[in-house]
Each structure stands twice: as C-alpha cells, then as structure tokens.
Image (cartoon, rainbow, N blue to C red):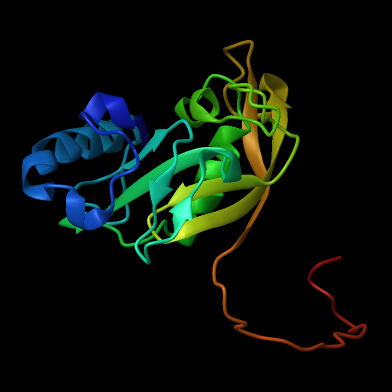
Length: 190
C-alpha cells in the first residue's frame, strides 16, 4: 500500500532508527486494515506492507553515505510487522516500479525524471529508489487490458496489469555463471 510520506507527517528521508514506530503504528494499522478490506484480504496479514514515498531529497543512507537527490527518482520506506524495514524489500521495489509507471498513482505523482520534471518517469527508464540502505534500481513494464479482456465487462475501462518487474538488490555478486536449458520434448513454456 503506497502513501505519501507527508500524509504520515514524515519527510521520506528518515532512517528506520529515526522513526518512532510505536507512535506511527496506529495509523499504519488503520491503513493496512482499510486496504485489506478494499482488496478482500483477511487480517491479520503480515504480507500487507505500507510503503511511504516522497519526491527526491538528499539524505544519509544507513552506512553514512550521502545520497544526492539527483541520484534518485523517488524516496521510499517500507514497514514490516512492528517496525520500519532496514531496506526496501524486493517485492516492495517491484511493486513500486510498477505503480510508478501508472499515471495517477501515489508513486507516479512523487517520481522525478532525470530531466527534473515531476511525474514524467512513466515508461522511460529504470526507477532509482532512494531507500535506507542506499539506491536500489528497479524496472517494470505495465500492460493495459480493455474491459473486454477482463471479467469487469460492465464498465468501460482500460486496466493496467504487471507484465514484468526486475531489480538490482545487492552490491555483492550472488551468482555468476551460464546454463544451457536445451530443448525438451515437453517444454511447458511453449
């Protein structure tokens, strides 16, 4: 669930240790419960996170590195049960990149493109996310379906859907190598 940092009384640059989560928790839980009801999810649901976003500002990462506002397109912080997460989660980054590419969403309204213009990132480049541990990059492709292609044929809508999302999560190499899949007699991906 994406919300504007200022709606929570935050700047978006805060590090997890700087956020008084006990004070913020009632509002976070209200947002989670309201969102769960709107999505038809049951509560409690530890997988439902709240992510607040803000337009780029210069800030200090947890390792003390200064992240300049020109290095990022958006600021983001995400909750985990009982606290602010030490970094943006992978699922959070993927969903943020998708939402940033849909005009009218909270994230798209806070994104600043490389040209310095607010809301002009859509479909143009990698999303550079300023998060507590530094800069995380994510890409996303959004597709569009008309109401004829969905189960909601009673409304004349064009709806977004996630085509792809990927991210760079770590500064260290997690895996390196090649694999040859070959052609199988029964290839489930054909």
